[in-house]
Image 1 (spheres, rainbow, N blue to C red):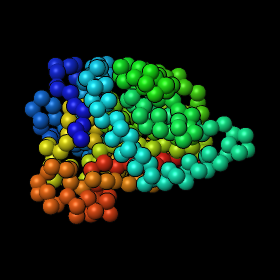
Image 2: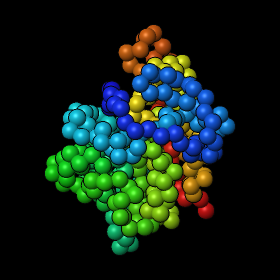
Image 3: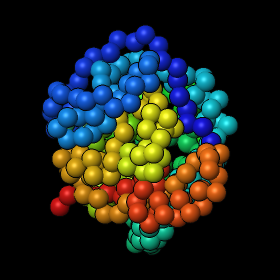
Length: 287
Ligand SMILES: [Zn+2]
């Protein structure tokens, strides 16, 4: 499965402070000619710096993104369900659904960057009440028309959702695309019910593939503005009101990469060491 990536265009780009420590000093890390990743000299967070403006980033998601999603959304929804299962979703779901016997409404799930909403389509069938947020209008429209979902075509900051109203806020492969991940976390923090959860999935900058492939890593693309290690992301989450309850990683070596024989043992080793290519974190609000 290929990651959706756009081709670098001349966009306005501006230097930014590090979102984790405020430093303005960066050391070059991976130069991909049309764009580059650098590492914060103080805290080590990997980021594109300078970065394109938010409007330019959002403009990349049009009809071609919908085509890509429709081709892959079933496979992605299956992967997302596997990650949820590994994070203990069944236990959380059982508890929340159990409340309905006491007259409680259906548990509420918010999927931020939901694309066509394929994950939510399955959750609605399981009894969840779902809302999606997706700035790509063609993808959001597809989810409304084909799956009958409530999907707002905007970004989370502008979605105007009621505070403390969601049992789960979910964002899969979203945070690495945002110019302002901290702002996203601040808004998400206000939307989660007091005993609710947030689940984030993002590439793991300390996985085998990132370590050994460097600039050739499949996540070192133009559309990823930040690439987090688990420690970086945990620190950012703590700064913005969250604590991490559980984390998993998966994927040691991408299918098709040589040596092929390395895939099975590396997948197993990566999972046990936390060096998988992608990580998922289950978080709750800090007490
Ligand atoms: Zn920093």
